[in-house]
Length: 96
Image (cartoon, rainbow, N blue to C red; front, top):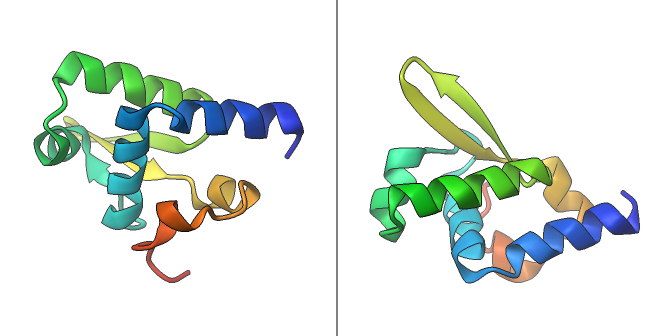
């Protein structure tokens, strides 16, 4: 991964809400969590959460999948590996 991509990813995680969302998703595991579950779990307003998720998806930290009428957000563990597995992000990460 080039320096620009690493810098962009780390910049997105520099926002406290996005960092909280990412940690929530890592703790949720390989199946991720629905947008509704993230919103309930973190108490972030829907419009704000949507903005943060879009920014995280743009740099490859997460991917979003539509399951029927539900959007599920899944952390990109491969991308996380390229960032060097910051300890505070992965303390609850499921074993690969």
